[in-house]
Length: 239
Image (cartoon, rainbow, N blue to C red):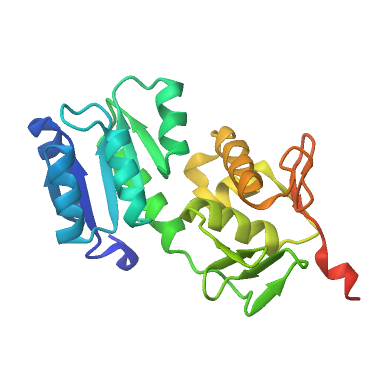
């Protein structure tokens, strides 16, 4: 197993003990440390006790469903969460992403697929932010500090989900240039997501809702129809 993933702690939350054993066996085979919880209340307690690097969270559970657990998690931490969905319905997938999940895996899944998704989410979550340092003053309204992982809008700190942050970073890193859908998928989500273009559209919309004064008429994140997206070139005003 690559050294970058050694000793990473994964919390598996599922009310089916057989599923928990199956996931544990395959993750431990790849060197992960695994903790488990059989319901939502246990999951919240284990999250505080274990401080996991990633959570695998089943949607269908009796006491608190996965969406309710996810909402509670997002109140206190941005730890990466992958939802486990039995039906594979798009409504469930979109709902999970809207509530702050980083990804989803549809049951039944192969061990290889699960481990690949876990590694992809960890890789992009823990990835370095590159060479952009110091406070970036986009304009009087928006300021970004990638070193501190802070986004300031009209003098107030804006809370971004980890995926939103990474997407913004790659757009700003390429200020003035068009970044294609495929490039964003590979940079932000990983090569495994090359066939999931809806991720980009969904998270571009989230960023616009949080950053743009008029999300329907964006100033910062511009659409290049049929190609990708471009962060407006704020540097030109200086030169």
